[in-house]
Image 1 (cartoon, rainbow, N blue to C red):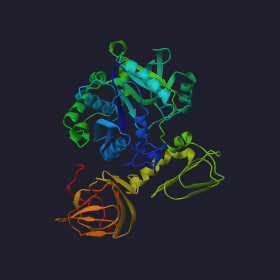
Image 2: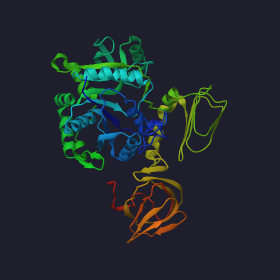
Image 3: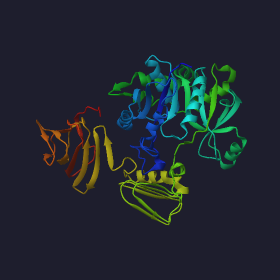
Image 4: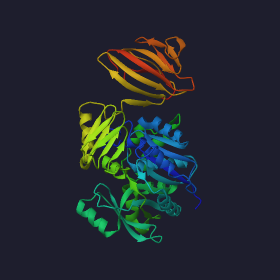
Length: 481
């Protein structure tokens, strides 16, 4: 098999059941939940040394995450030949269609390996062995999916019923895809030995996918063709046209195409296959899953951060900033962040999403972002806020440039803690170094830059009547915001 395998990483979703660590603007796939790398980075690096793997990848994410995704790729020295920005979510079939179109526009017909960015796989050798079988079948024009070998009667996943043996137990035809079952049905699936969890991972040639989506869901192909054609390049990204993409139906790969291939049987020129995958897979959709796969102490606790545990067992204790003192806890989850703390029964963590829904309904913002907010130039941490003041700790990366901007309702005092700031204030430009400060009056155009080689650390004290992010009038911005 000599066809190039192109990773297509689906990096959407908000991971609301992992709140307060996962936020809408900083979701679980961008977090280091099971090691030093983030889930997105792990998804990519577990493909190292795979035969015929492409030197570049395709990533599909939403606009709000674009700079975070780009920075995480840079950290692991991986390049994306297509970093596609979805204006709205339309499920996996349109996402794969956009990736196939991008692959075609580059003049390629690669085998596309579609993988969600928020899964954990602990046995990489078994994973790559399954991928090799998948690549062989995809090279023969199969639509290949990977089914997780179940170890319990799970009601939270869809299932795949495997059919006839294709390659000595390594791969099978697909009898059907089934929705999430009740407990009794899930147990019958487990007992039969013929059902696998639907992992959402697929392999298929880009030309084969375009042909099949055109046959079975032409409205998706037409909408994606128009949305891609009307899109535009912006820095390292390709922005899909919003108006055209909003007209695209929302559907998954299995329902839009795979099920119809199975139903058409001999009438279809390609076949669908499933490969059983037993590689320590988890989608860590909730805190209970993360506890299950975590490294436990002798009392069954998963502990991270500044934590003291006394007579506690089978609990998950996660501290980001402050000391957690746990005494006599059993089956409890405690997650501490700078602006929110979750305390929950480990057996009821699926209901964390109800907390997020309540936060939204109250008009609060703890579901959106952490206290520390990341920007393409660096980050800022809101240290304190009162009725007429807001204090931030700002870090500007080397080479980082804030937009040329102005505010109608606030003035700003800047105090440099370390590094050197290049400041534009009205018609003047000057340098501010460590232990120096400057003042930006209300209504004055201003810009902050770090032209040095070390991070610029500074304290910003805003004073005025309104501090919302919508009181930013941008005149110039190198990041295209």
